[in-house]
Amino acid sequence: MTTQTGVPRAPSLHTTWWKAPLVASLPGLPLLVWEYSLCRAHGEIWQVLYWAMGLFAIAWALPRRRSLRTLRVVAATLALGCTLLPAFLLLLLAVLVVTGN
Image: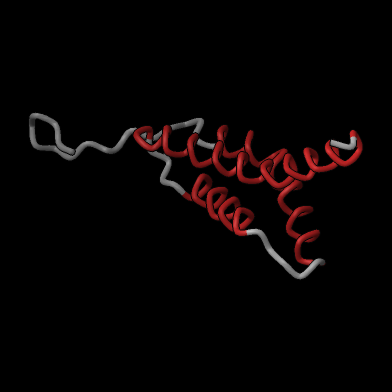
């Protein structure tokens, strides 16, 4: 990107780039580690856990430019959703077993 005088302009850096990955990682990473160890102990790994790990890595590794803010928030949100999905399914299964439906 250049200005009218032809001098290259530095990309605008996003000073609070770390907020979205941090908010998703605080509840998500401990749950992801627990789910991974639980699935690993039973000899099978759900593919959604690999997706969650990859999306967390993408959310943290994206360049710190303001133009990538939306992509970082989407990656962090999807990572948290992929992490919560197996726990939600296990909770739903437990509720159905207890209620007898």
